[in-house]
Length: 260
Image 1 (spheres, one colour):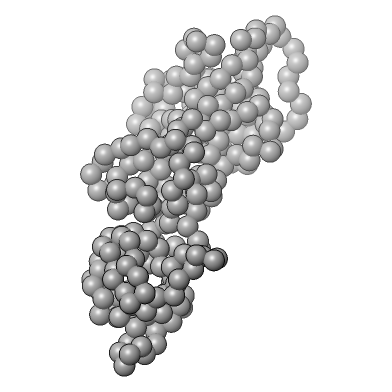
Image 2 (cartoon, helix red, strand yellow; image 1 turned 120 degrees about the vertical axis):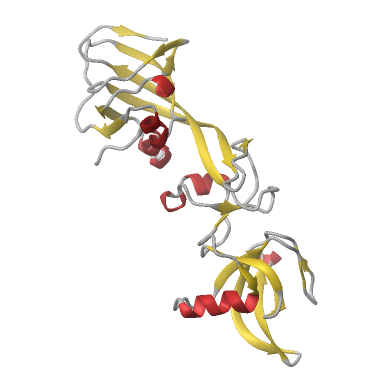
């Protein structure tokens, strides 16, 4: 495994694979990456080992990429998220379909608008994901046959191609929960939308508490917790790049122990 930042490692970690033994293999975590163990601050030096025994999602920080504003979400947040495929917006539905055709993308495609869409069947709320299945004639004019929702709550809608947006194309698939998005490596650092939130677009930054046993060069073993909220970019901004790597083999047994 290639060395990665602690934040990236924890985000991609399957809790079912614990415990895992890591080695700090590049740089030193300090300044913004100081960790708390049993109420005391410490840093992790190159060569130190830690056995990760448990991870807990503490909170998720949402950032509005347009304004820089942030808000916090609880891990129990029930809203659904969809990835934005491109910052490009389209003024009409016909422009969106034409752009997809030019890029050789085949239907169905998913999209949303930041405005409400009035159809014969119902009013589509702003930022509600829709799946465009086909273009067909409806009441003598060209319409997009769209599906809103899934399962028993699925609704069939006909939206005229002249419908004004703006529209944004979404990633394929059904909208995902907060935990599903955080566990999907393909969605990490992606721009997302969520109808339950007031912002049109947002990015997510999770903060985890990591329960681990540290084993330093001195042979001291300490049981405690560390925070994995620091991202690799922020480590670089502090002039250091701390990275960890999975270690194969047994956990060292020598040396004195201290437990929290």
